Image (cartoon, rainbow, N blue to C red; front, side):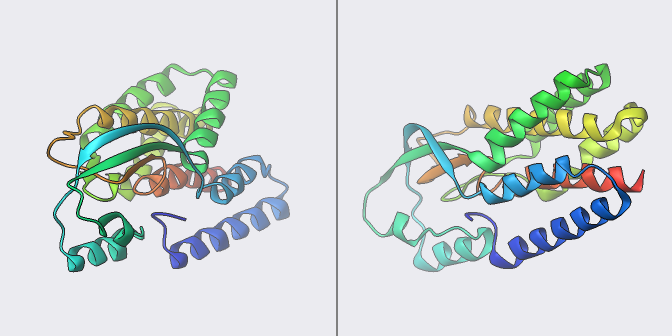
Length: 219
């Protein structure tokens, strides 16, 4: 999976299997854990939606390898030619965007909550602010962002923490992620592909749901 190294992926599967085991043992619903299973299984699928001409950064081979190591994305082929521009593919990740967004909208519709709308607006703004564009990689979100929806849900909607944290958190993060696209200066920076909910942002979306599931076990 682009953007998630093998060790992290194994840890996510082990943690998810542990949570499911606990839920079965105590008789709790495994519906949200099943959602996480589908998210992990489809996190490597990007669906192209557009193309955009963007400047190709003049990275050295060492810099390319460093980016590959840090962000767990294969980049050497993207920088193997002498072209000055990328024909950038903008894609939506199936497991990191489409499935979580649809699930979050369904949860929000079934459990409408004013606090959820407020938290969603906050998450859009915060995501837009903290997101960064890494040349060659795409839009990157910091993992700690996943904690904010849960904290806000505990403060503003303690009676419905799990549903609010997932619906407002996921929708807010993903919409905020989309707003970052309009701020990218294609004449000054670029990447061969930008995956919304994929490399650079998958973990933040996944961990937002995972923390809410963990909160349901504690509460």
